[in-house]
Image 1 (cartoon, rainbow, N blue to C red):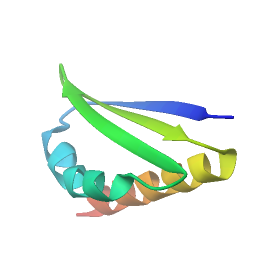
Image 2: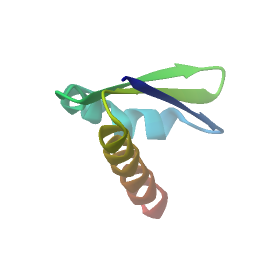
Image 3: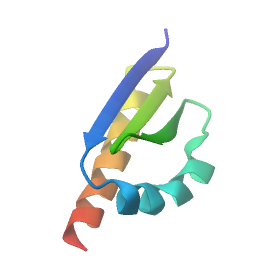
Length: 72
């Protein structure tokens, strides 16, 4: 079963977008991957995972990156 998730972040997303871009090269794994799109002052992150554990791991990884970004 495939799992799909989508995060939409509003606000000044230019710096966050630049901070997340290096993660794109590392995002393709055997069990999950994600893409980032920027449009109209929003950032859309799409996640595709083969199982719920992989989806949760990807979400955890992204939220840790968000936390680091917020603290800097």
